[in-house]
Image 1 (cartoon, rainbow, N blue to C red):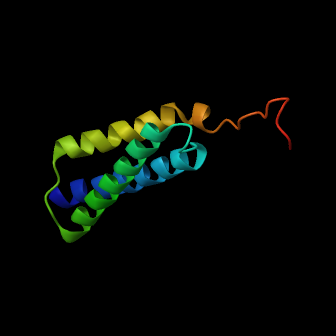
Image 2 (image 1 turned 90 degrees about the horizontal axis):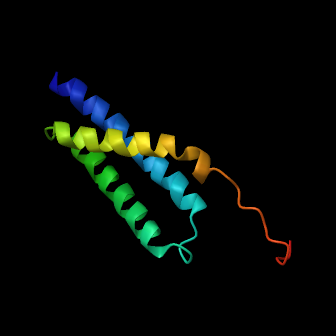
Length: 93
């Protein structure tokens, strides 16, 4: 059972890193610096947790719940994040 939890948590960590990378691709750091910092921290923490899973450290059910919550949040907000901003009429193209 412990190995199954490690595999599920490692998969969730990879999904979290992919989701935060997608968010970071869409967010402009100069417009939203705090959100960018938070997303970098989430990506670094998820990658660190993934490395711990590879090394065989025990998995906390609370960590798995947190990773699942981040993935579900990213899925719920994907429509908002994947919208392309429309240029204003005063901007040059």
